[in-house]
Length: 523
Image (cartoon, rainbow, N blue to C red; front, side, top):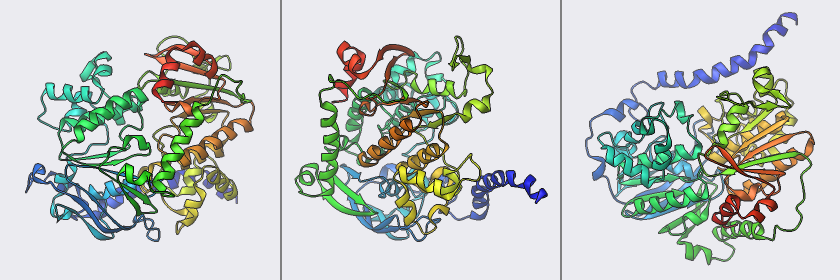
C-alpha cells in the first residue's frame, strides 16, 4: 500500500493527459478520408460557393454522436430553409438546434437521411465550398486580419464598413492600435460581446450566400444587440438564413419557425400561427418569457428582500471592463497601477494557488475537458463521492439528461465539450463550481447560453448556493438585468469607470445610467 500512496495523486494527471492525446491519435488514425480531413478544405473549387444556392432541406435526418451511440440527437428530422428567407430553430437546450448547423457544415455526417441544397446532396460539394462562409474561432492576430478571414481580398473600406454594420467600429477606433490591435489567443484580450461583434463583421464582409446565426447576439447588451440585430436583418435580406435563438423576440419576423424537442420537429409555422396554437410549445415558451418581463415590471419601490451574503453585481454595456475585473481577481493579469485588496491584503502578496482555490468562476464560455461528465464535474477535487456529484448535477437540472445517456456519468463530453449543447456545457460547469463550495463566487454571464426554463432553475440554484454560506461573497456580471435585482450592491461601469452604484431601488430613483439600461431591457 505504501507504493500506491505515491502513485494515486498522479492518476488525475494521467487521465488529463489521456484526454489531451485522444484527438491527436484520432487525427493520426483518420488517414486520407476526404470526409474528415482538412486537406479537402484547401482543394481548388470545382464550383464556386456563389453558385451554391437554393433551398436547404433536411430529409428524414437521424444523427448519433460517435461517443453516445445509444442516445440519438436527431430523430427523423425534416425541415426546409427556403432560399432567400429566414428560418428559425427554437427549443430548449439540447434539443438538437446547433447539431443541425454542425451537420450542414459537415463537421459530422448524418447517421441516416440526407441534407440537400437545391435538391443536391451537400456531400457533392467539397468541404471548403460549404465552410468558407462561416468563421467562429478568433485567431491570435490583429482585428483587421480576423475580419479579413471572411474575405481574403477585402479592401480596408469593406472591412471598416462590415465593422460598422456589426457595431464594432466605434470600440475598435478607441483602442491604441485600432484595427491593428492584437486580439490574443482565442480573443482573450476582448470581451465576449466584442468577440461576437468581430465574428459578425467577418460574416458580413463576405456577403455570404448562406447565413448561419447560432445565438449570434447572446453575449451582447441590449443596446448593442438592437443595433447588431438591425444589421443582421439587413444582411439576411435575399439570403438563405438559419437562426438559432433562445430570445424569441429576435426571431418573430422569421419566414418560418421550427420548434424542436428531443431531436424532432414538433411544430412549424410563422410567429403568428404558432402563437395562436393553444397549448403549443412555442406559445408556452413565448408566454414564459413574457411572464418574466411582467414579473420584472412589478413595482420595485417597495422594500426588497435582502440576501444574507454580500452580493455585488457589475452591469453595463459590452466592453466596459466587467470581465476584466474577474480576470484581475483571478490574477490572469495584474493591475497596471493602484491596488486590488482581498480581505484588506494586496492580492499580489497572497499565494496564487491559494487565491484561486477560493474562487469559483463560471464564465460565458464554459471550459470542459475531454473526460467523462463525472470527471468534469469533480475536476480539481480528489475522492469525491458519486452521491455529491449527482447532487450537484441535480441542482443544475442536468441529472435527468445524464441519466438518459447509455453510459450515464461515464459519458465522455468530447474535446471542449463538443458533444454537448451550449446549455448542457454551462450546466455541467456550474455543477462543478457548486460542488467545490467556493468562498468567492464569480459569475460572468453564467446563464447566457440557456433557455428561460433552465435559466430560472440555475438562478435559483445559484441564489441557494449564496444563502448556504453567509460568509460567501458573490460577484456577478450580467446583461440580463432581471437576474441581478435582489443583490446588495450594483455597480454600473462605463469605459472602465464606475459611474453609479447602489441597490436596485436606489439606482431606479436616480434615473441615471442604470435606469436607462432598464428601459432598454424592457423591464
